[in-house]
Every structure is written in C-alpha cells, then in structure tokens.
Length: 354
Image 1 (cartoon, rainbow, N blue to C red):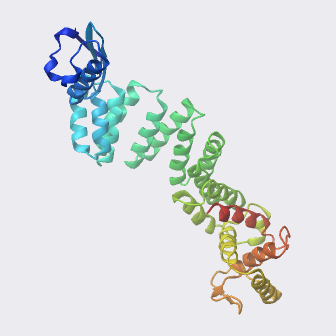
Image 2 (image 1 turned 45 degrees about the vertical axis):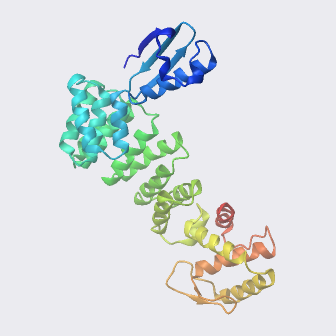
C-alpha cells in the first residue's frame, strides 16, 4: 500500500505530552521525546513509521501493513480458517491477484478442500501460464486428486518452460516414480542432482529410481551420495532403507559403489574400538582372523558369531568391519584386502563428525 505522510509545525505539538525536561524546542531531548511518543502512538496501527523532528516541523511517514502480510502471519500461527476467510475478502477486490490466488489454493489444499483448491490454482495457471513453480504446485495438487495423467502434463510443462529448475525436475521425477515409470524418473533426477548437487532428497530418490529400474550399482552410489551429504535425518534414513533393499552381493557391490550397511558397521566398530586399549584391540583382531579361517558370510544377517574377547553376537559383516577397524588401529593405512577400504574411509569421516 502507498505510504502516507503527515506533518505539523513543531510549535503545534502539545508539550504537556512530553517529560518536563524535554519541552524545549530544538533540543535533542525534545526531538527524542517526540520521536518516542509518536512511535508508541503509531504502534497500534501496524506497518512501519518514520519520524522526522526539527525546530520547524514534525513529520511522520507511515507505511500501512499489507493485508496479505497480516494473513501470512495468521497462517504461520495456524489460523487457517481465518486466513481463508480474509483471502476471500481480498480476492473480491483483486480477483486476478496470482499471489492471493495461489495462497488461497495452498491453504485450501492444506485444509483438505482439494476441489476448491484446484479451482484457485487453475486460475493462477490460466493468468500466468509460464509461472513454473505454480505449474509444479498445480501438478502436485492434481496428483493428490488421483488425476495422474493430467498431473504429469502440468509437471512436464513446468520442466519444458524451465529445464534448469531442479525443483521442477525433482517433483516430476517423484511423480513418475510413483507411477512406476522408473527410467523416466531416473533421467529427471539425474538432471536434478546435476543442477543442485547438495539436494539430499534428489539423491535418495534417484537411488530408489535406479534400484527399481534394475541398476543396483548406480543405485548404491546415489544412496551413498545422499548419506554423505548428511548422515542423519529423514532422507539419510530413506537412503539406508533403499540401500538395504539392494541385492546382497557383497563382492559385486564392493567393486562398484561403497556398501552402505558396511559403512554403518564400520562406524559402530570405530566408535567401540576407540574406547578399548590397543593391546585389547590386537586380541580382538587375532580372534576375528582365527574365526574367519573359513570365511564369514556377510550376506546373511541372521547368522551370528561369538567372540571371547567381546560380549554379544555378531554378523559376518560386523566382524569383517571390526577387523578392518582393528587393522587401522594396529597399523594405520594398511589395507587388509577385504574390499572395505572405501567403506571404512567413509565411516571414519562420519565417526569424526559426531
């Protein structure tokens, strides 16, 4: 809204409203007291106030609050019904305001009123058909109404209009993935991670697309990239779950991307062994090497092994990872040839970050 300016002569100000020591015109005390009085007086009006005081004049410039800002504040406070009602009033005056239309659509969608939300979002697209983010929002909205083919068309339009938009690429891919179009999803996710390499969601979802498309080695690499960005949180856990669904062929996976379950076992081994004296670590390493004379089955987590030097039961994969960690304590830099070097290095970085 347009700012409004008001001004009066300094001599016209009621001095009785000021502290006794601040009633002399032209003094710093007078200027400060007038400023404080007016700031307080306009506080209830909302918006922003700028005040100028000198010997001749007192001027106030008031920038009224934008009603949409007020509504946005209500949204953040969870007052959704009130926000929707206020937006209806604003739209009666500006029916083609795309910002208000989109906010209304999103609010109605969040309230579960999908048909009404659809009406407002379609108006946004009709008014500004080249507004990429609204096309994406529209596509997702329609997808939730199970109108899958039309949702794909909106999302594809967004990507065509702005092929360098990683958000559009990612959401198109995620929608294609839900419709079992795995190869197409992977193509768009490859573009998304190139455009935004630090997007953990895109890397984890790319892993899913590649896994479902029958590309386990590439899937494992994508999962590892997702976890490396941040080893904790929703998408790191999603990447771990996806990684654990890959075919359990240790040798093949070790020859390609790092194996995530081995990384996790190495992290646990590093943390445990860091609290054990080196002489005890040597005993653990010796016992593991003796127990592994016939090899460990690293792909059967239900099969357990026992050690005299450590309490509990261990899987074959855990013992292999413990042996790798023991070797680095006993002789740092030594690769024992169990194809876990990359997994151990990733685990070491993650353990140090904790």
